Length: 174
Image (tube, rainbow, N blue to C red; front, side, top):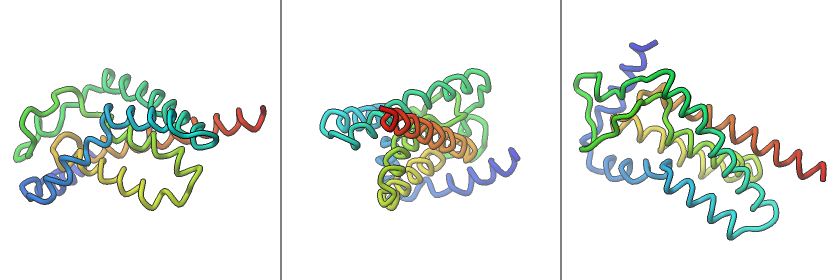
C-alpha cells in the first residue's frame, strides 16, 4: 500500500514546475487553512440567518470536532512528510515540518462544505471541485501523500454529516 501511495505522490508531484498549476495550487491550498476556514464559517454565522445560519454553525462545529482526531492521529502516527522521505520530491521553500497524516487542510475544507452540500445539494457542483483541488494541492505541493488527503477528506465528510444531522435532529425536536 505504501508503494502505491509513493507512486501516486510522485505522479502528482512531478508537475510541480508547471507555472500555471503552481499559481493555482499555491493559492487554492490556503482555502483549507485555518484562517480561511475559520473566517468563512464565522462570517457565515454573523451574516446569515435561519437555516443558513444554523448550517454555518454546523460547519463551525464540524470544523472544530474534525480536528480532534487529526491532532490525535498526528501524535499517535507521526508520519514524516513525503518531501522529507522520498527522493525527487518537489516542495515549496520553508515547507511544513510537522507530521503529514492526515491532512488538516483537506479535513478542514471537507468539514465545512459538507453541511452546506447536505442542505443545498446543488452547491456540490462548486464546492466538491474546490475541496478536491485543495486536497490535490497538498500532494502537488509535496506536503502530503494521497492517503493523507483521502483520510482527511473522509474525516471532514464524516464530521460534517454528524454535525449536520445533530443540528437537524435538534431543530426538529424543538
